[in-house]
Length: 185
Image 1 (cartoon, rainbow, N blue to C red):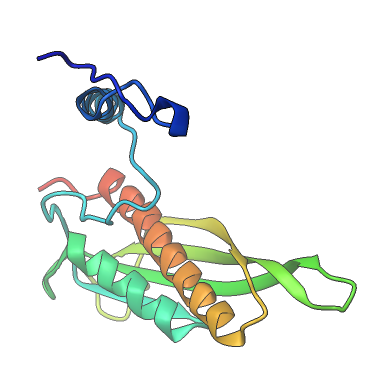
Image 2: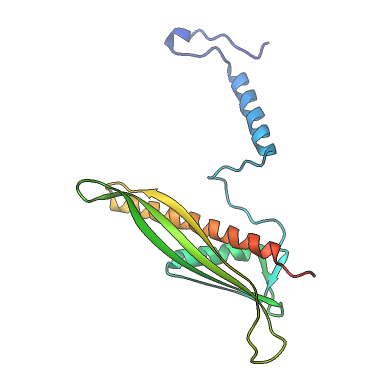
């Protein structure tokens, strides 16, 4: 038996490469891509391994309730909350949209959604009523685009999915900062 199978449907648009060869090439490509660190955009989001960051609290504020909830949930997947911990995290985000493609009929067919996020990691003070010193603070921004159709329902669903992607990306970026700046145990 050979790896290549002759197809009798060549005149009908068939291929001479058999199913096994296609499967072998796909597996080889998958192994090669996984070895170089490639991660598909549509891959399921995962936590960053063990919960090696311990915080006393996480406070997320945003002008979009779904975004606020998803960022907090993603952070909680990778962070241990302990009220006695030395550090607390504050995350402030603002979601904005901008129309990119506008038809002659004044209809927006594509828009950008941007999440601008500021984060502050604070260390608890030893003294009462003393301000908590800032360990790390910074800003990050993530943008995604949405194609809208003539259906308002599908446009709303696409927008909600885009906000979900932005929340996951924002949480990922904040977690990277937390991992780099975590206190030595």
